[in-house]
Image (cartoon, rainbow, N blue to C red; front, top):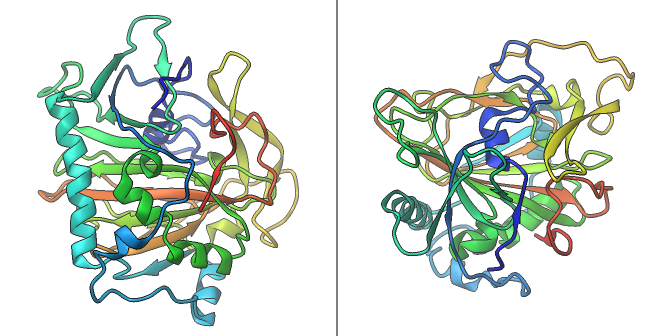
Length: 352
């Protein structure tokens, strides 16, 4: 893997603090950037030149179901609500295998074993690694028990899980996802990023309301997020919560760009970007208060949601962890600005 370092704060830091929220009651301020001072990298040798085969992943499947097109009822539900729950997409064996891979890399990081690099960027002007195409870990906020560098619980790993970890690469590029994407109008699906979200027992922090389309940005909007529960996700351990229908009433008002200095920054859109056919296309947007619905899903369940959908999650106050895998896509036919922060360092986004 080539060593490419930039001067940009880690994108995971932005996502962890959810600076792309438009909720005035949230803890983050829209349009600002938070820098995480301790970052750990798990080094992987990977080759993205060849499209992965699904054969290796399907060896785990056993009696799992074959990919099927969405029903008209599912289409209608998604169009109204902006999300779709598909239970039992992964078999127990598949979810367990992926969870073991996720825990393995977290153990490697916590033990600083072979292939682990620490990036201490607390010094002024310290270089910060770009998250694109890499497995980088950020940590939960300091507390009274753990405040030493690199000893806090892991919060997220990304944003190139699908490029570096073979099991997640095979999962991401499955025929099921291509079928779902195209059935929801994404004709040429391209993967922008992928993450492992580790809400560990008793310490996983809350996430304020936000829209993924501010990060995976195109004009017109085309972002889709695939969110897999590798463990049971409940209200107690911080399951995903969504504002049904908000993809039609909450346009994108910002996008994440790469500045001339290489730093990521949020740029206000001159004209808010609405999802196709939804809401008033005016320039002025009146902030709305949304009611969020918890989406409790069992291990192996998949949630697919629109890039404009407002979503959030609570802290993990339980004694059970809630590890999830998520990746985002855009339509290759939609315009993605050249200064988008998620643009690959070399080449273009890879096909799903």
